[in-house]
Picture 1 (cartoon, rainbow over the protein chains, first blue to last red):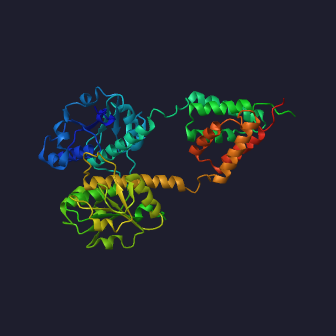
Picture 2: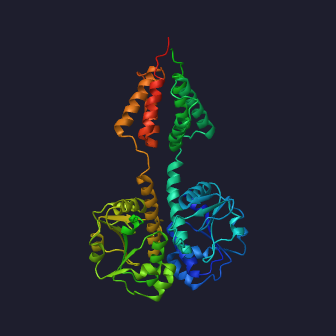
Picture 3: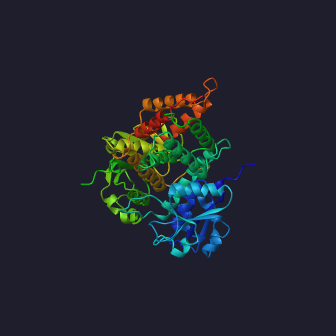
Amino acid sequence: MNPVSPLDNVRIVLSHTSHPGNIGATARAMKTMGLSKLYLVNPKRFPDSEADARASNARDILGSAQVCTHLDEAVRDTHLAAALTARPRDLPHPTLSARQAAMALVRQARQQPVALLFGRESAGLTASEISQCQLTVQIPANPAYSSLNLAAAVQIMAYELRMALDESVMHSAARLPELASLHEVEGFHRHLEQIMITSGFLDPKQPKRLMRRMRRLFARTRLEKEEVNILRGLLSAVDVRKPD
Amino acid sequence: MNPVSPLDNVRIVLSHTSHPGNIGATARAMKTMGLSKLYLVNPKRFPDSEADARASNARDILGSAQVCTHLDEAVRDTHLAAALTARPRDLPHPTLSARQAAMALVRQARQQPVALLFGRESAGLTASEISQCQLTVQIPANPAYSSLNLAAAVQIMAYELRMALDESVMHSAARLPELASLHEVEGFHRHLEQIMITSGFLDPKQPKRLMRRMRRLFARTRLEKEEVNILRGLLSAVDVRKPD
């Protein structure tokens, strides 16, 4: 029995699509990347011969598409919903890049259904639609002309979801080391600072540029739990007041 | 005066395109990602109203497109040409993923023109066309259905080229701190090992698993020159034999 792919847990939701060609092209974009769950909220024309033509050999995706009258129906039983937006919104939503969002979605999709929403060709998603999502997604684009075609945006996101799948398989291998918690990392930083002061290397009265540099260094690496243990062991071992 | 973007040195070459809609969608895909140089080798219909319609506000790209009768004309003065292929070919070409190829192309495009070739909708590039390129590119896709629409393939590559640009700008910004040389990093590792032994934390007779862990940690971060100086300063400060 094949294990279910996390991509089977990722829904592509198109809201109020005007051009059936974009629905067909979306189906093809999805299938080329291994996605299959298409939800259509109030499409203007569907089914439609133009959608069929543009879907090429992905007509099965159109055939199994769920047509809904309200966005609620498409996202109701998902555990994470992300909204694609072309421009920054004045809304209290964390915004991720396409790549970051794909990784977050695939991670969640290993457990539960997730949804990725795309709005109207003309105006994108409404503020009310976005408010039903936990995060917004932006595809990095030319600031002078960022107007991607709807199906082209789906293609990029579908591609990044597939790439994230490979990534997350790599990173979820059972043998991957456990990362230290933020609390543990903070404990290490404090210990390091104390040793820097005790050893006379850092003058606590001077600005703490040195500590900022060290924090920056270790922030880049994402310390593992065992590494923090080793580093703190070393700090304890060298913790002897200077015998002067 | 704006500096020239490496993306201005990247040509998108479409060979023998059948559907003018794909040419228009390619222009839009290019412009959304900041690409502008379009070359058309023997397009079936061009210019064409369908191309204009699908280009949306990227019609300027169509207006400045170079139409050629032979592929030679499009790639003649480029320094790196990459051919998109859907399936592995029995040809002596190195094959890169979309992401890898984008990075290689942008790197080269900082100096000289480069080209990325896309073949016919039906059959892709011919063996003879591919043989004029230095490398082939594959977009990771669903093995059961990898047939991306032509303009969708251009969109993914254009997106990866833009992402590679950010990547390479990030890594080449003038103000970026100078990385430590391998020699300096090695000096730090030796110093660290010496302190680990002097402090009694590491038994030199035991297997050096601890040092391997430390090397792995710092290999992940790519130490900067100044960071190595700080770390070695700290190691010197704590370098006092245990008093007993």
